[in-house]
Length: 240
Image 1 (tube, rainbow, N blue to C red):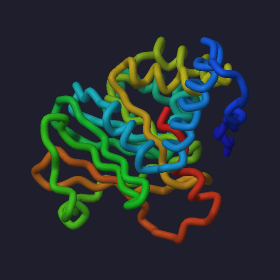
Image 2 (tube, rainbow, N blue to C red):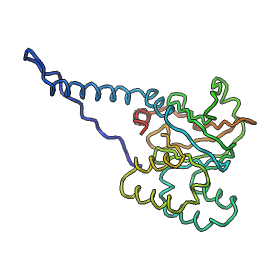
Image 3 (tube, rainbow, N blue to C red):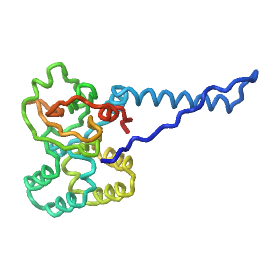
Image 4 (cartoon, helix red, strand yellow):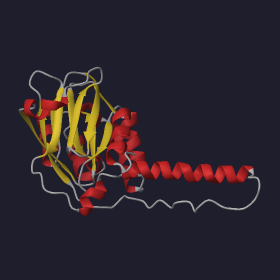
C-alpha cells in the first residue's frame, strides 16, 4: 500500500534585528503561523476528522449506498465487470461489489453526513438533518450489512447509480493512474459522494452495521487490535 503522507517543511525561526518590519517580514511570519496551525491540526487526529465531518456529505438518490475502497473505482477488472452487467439485475452488480471488497447498504433517499472518530475507531453515517445519540449507537446497530476492505486507506461512499456512469469511471481511472488521487476524491465529491480515511496505515477490514428502522449505518473494525506506531500515524493525516 502506498504511503501518501507528504512531508511538510516548516519555516525557520523569527528573524531578529531592525527597528521596523517591512511588508515582506509580516508576510513571512504569517506564512509561518499558518504552517504551524496546519501542522498542529494534522497532529491532532480528532481535529482533522472534525474538519472532514463538517465538510463531507453523501447524496443517496437510488436508495442504495456503496461502500468500497477508493482504488476499486479505478480498477479495470472491477469496472469492466460492472459495465458488462449494466443491463443486468442489481443482484449481479452487488455480487461484483462484494467480490472486490465492498458492500451495498439500502438507505432511504436523502443527504447523509459522516461522523468519523479516530479514537473510537467508528464511522457513523446518518441523515444530515439529525444528530444521533452516539452513546449507545454501537449496541443499537445490530443488523449486519457485510464488510468492506480498505487497502488504500480511503473509503469511497457513493450512490450505486454512479457505477453505471461509464464516462465518470473512465475519468476517475485516468486521474488515478495519472497520480492525481486528490483529484479522484474531488471527483467523487463533485458527484454526490464522499471519501473518508480508515484507521490503520496498512488497511482495515470494517464491519458494516445498520440500526433497525433508522437511516443510520455504522462501521468499525471487527477485530480491535492495539494500534502500533505506524497505525497511530495513519489517523493523523489531513482529511483531504
